[in-house]
Image (cartoon, rainbow, N blue to C red):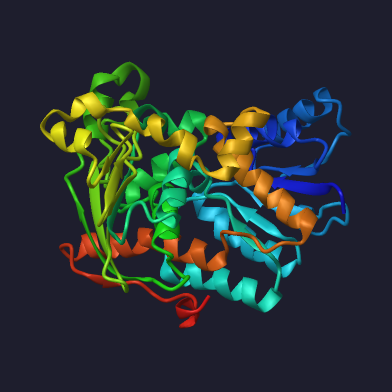
Length: 400
């Protein structure tokens, strides 16, 4: 195989962006032979984009099962709504179609187990497409950790802090799934952007695992206030009781003794941040100031009380510690969405298929990261009580 024939399931904002910015820019390795969405207009729009790029018109359908039975589909990308991710992926696995599944939180622990069992029983390859694991700073920090700069890692934190008030309140017009989730659920609903890189740093499922969590949610006020301030646009939501807390804080305890803090903040006015932060016995990194503090560095110690002078100092370490993947990527030229992360994660999916290599983010990672959502929901509903996190590897985490 020298070209992967892709069935693309889900053509909304994310799926459409991946098609235009990644798949159609990688025609030497990828051919999109089938497209699917619940909405016919999205299907037709995708077909137009594909043919406009000089590619053959793909098969189009509103029924994803028709994609799974096609002989001209080597693998599928699952980029539909959060609620449908696992169901579609499970069906694809049992249909022997390798799966690349986009991110989002799960809806139950049982759903996560169903994904694991489907992959184990079918033996079909599966990759969780967490693009933030391919972020430039995330990979640079991993490289520095591997080279001993950070010493032993003790604590990591991360956030998904993004003002989504317009997207959520215009959910019906945008045909976006977030609105119904924010009305009915209160949880850490989007944990994997921040957790994925941290889990890799802490070797979760590879000699370490997450044991338990507690979650606490603030009251829900931001969405209602936004509706009141934009009545001419979204006044029909004035009487809606949004359940999603404005700020959700989740603390996770790991088998190795490390702790993880996750923060979800999408209902209030603010700047975008994943606040990727790593604390080790010899160094720390913080994303918001894009700075390293390295033990023993005299200049850093001198300026600890005036740290603004060190904002952005991470760039000073790029020449020595840039991750080889990013070093090559920058040399070849950035491509794809989200600063290049999309190109790297989807490129890895395709290359693994072409080279018959195991996927680097597997079904056990997907289950462990996605299960944070229903477990946080349980913890919040019981007054922030601790909740155990299942071991989806069934004990194999000790020597995987």
